[in-house]
Amino acid sequence: GNFVPPVKSNGNNVGNMSSRNSGKCDDVLDDSTKRCLEMLCGPDGELPEKLRNLEPRLIEHVSNEIMNRDPNVRWDDIAGLEHAKKCVTEMVIWPLLRPDIFKGCRSPGRGLLLFGPPGTGKTMIGKAIAGEAKATFFYISASSLTSKWIGEGEKLVRALFGVASCRQPAVIFVDEIDSLLSQRKSEGEHESSRRLKTQFLIEMEGFDSGSEQILLIGATNRPQELDEAARRRLTKRLYIPLPSSEARAWIVRNLLEKDGLFKLSNEEIDTICNLTEGYSGSDMKNLVKDASMGPLREALRQGIEITKLKKEDMRPVNLQDFETALQEVRPSVSSNELGTYDEWNKQFGSLS
Ligand code: ADP
Image 1 (cartoon, rainbow, N blue to C red):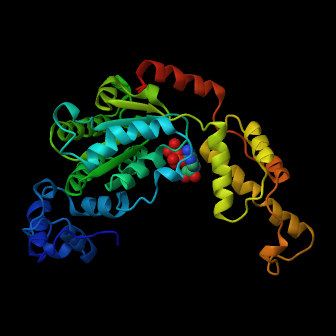
Image 2 (tube, protein in one colour; image 1 turned 90 degrees about the vertical axis):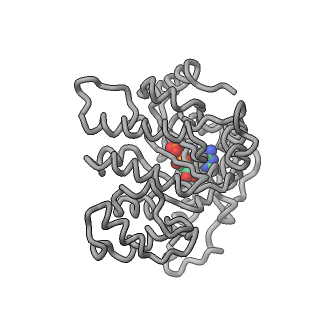
Image 3 (cartoon, rainbow, N blue to C red; image 1 turned 60 degrees about the vertical axis):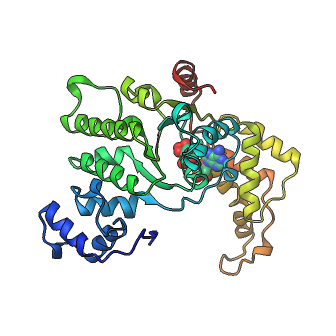
């Protein structure tokens, strides 16, 4: 339901196209697939060249499951990471907004790698880029290509890049990109995953050299597994670290304020920040969720029935709730792992 068709198509060509290219009869395509293909037709009512030899069901899967026209995240939703926001704005948002200025010497790289511990906002940044640059957002987890789409991954990758090129400007976000572009395990590597990787690199090469308005963002928690070919294509490599103390305070405040539950003093917030050194953004979110259950649990302990409980009967979330939640929600990233990211950042990261 997210589509805005570029033009109204008479639909005839979609039927012709599918029968010509997939060898299936027109009536094999169900209505939703036909509708989806119609929406991708150009002003002449024809399916763009790039999509003609692709299987309609894969185009439909990309359009319905992978594409997201309004990712609904803005810079202001992301705590901290000022350095990454600044780099990304200059490197990818401005070029997507003003392709006429960013050409020649100023032409941007087409590949960006966001690396760092899990739950630090890499996916949020991808979505915010698409939102701020008014681009169509495509999200795919690379591990699903290798696990769920066994044997079909290559075709799905072609469909993904094909649909993206019809929906420019576009941002393709590939989560866990290491599982797709990992260093060759020479003999151990399966033929199918080698083909998938090759196809992916070919597609990247294709839009890198052209004038297409497509940006590929890869995210990984294991940058050290990427091979040299992948690194070369992901020209900017930004470290997305654990949130600073200020960013953690912001997450706590922001989440509680959204629900009207914020009543902590500055000193209490400081205490929470001191106790959460090493927590990721997503750990902080889990902590706030757990702490916000404190007042509810207490009210129930006092014998109030859940069905009769009024919101006014519950006290605000307090420091004690956080201290209790801290027993349950532990940091998910170890300090050993952090060392690995620092090392890789020194060696391959983009510092500016
Ligand atoms: P990653 O892609 O790095 O694994 P995500 O972007 O999916 O992490 O973040 C997971 C969740 O954690 C987000 O939905 C958000 O609620 C929270 N989160 C993580 N980092 C931040 C941040 N910097 N600011 C605000 N929320 C964050």
